[in-house]
Image 1 (cartoon, rainbow, N blue to C red):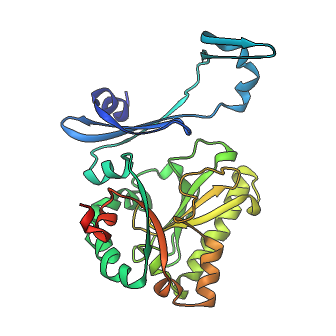
Image 2: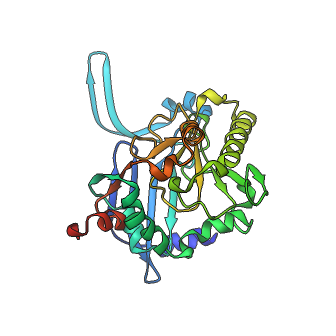
Length: 294
């Protein structure tokens, strides 16, 4: 039994944090050995090789309705294939709980002054332990077998690996490129000095996706989140076919092509621009911008 399986057996349910019925994804809060833990369960896509046999393996049909040429029901598919993606955060923090808890989403229209006075101090207050998992990936102590590409240059180097959200299908491709340098916390830090890094990520992403999935560059969406979920510079790489991929919405995703173009035209663009972003109303950064909401 793996360490993950042992941890799952110890999990004690507390409450549902959020339930996305459209994407068949649920986050639940609990504890393991008296420490907070968050589990997510997400229905996986069907493997294309199994689809021709699905009808033969239906069973235990309930709530059957038949009307002329139409019929529908609830049932099970009796195929021995893992059908649920399971993820865990353990030990979790209250910040994790607030991130995954159902909450209203609000828009903050952040000026450079608001970034200087509120957002940047918030970023600087975050403990380095929050990104220890990123360090583990970069130094090879974790997920080394999942690395698709590695460039060890200390200034312009990065790794590319599958994001934990990827289910392995080309249509829902979701990779991430993580920079080695740790002095870029977010989009606001980018300057002309970072153009070689950004272009290197773009070039490697196109090449490696083509090699591994046969998707062309014009079938990909490369973008940077603002605000990101963690403040160590990274670029998201998704298939355009994955239309409802997490985080591709306006108010969060900034296309890499546009970011490069903005900096090349206006070197201080991201230091001078007003950058709106969407964030949950329980998030500490939202509360920092709206202390009266606490």
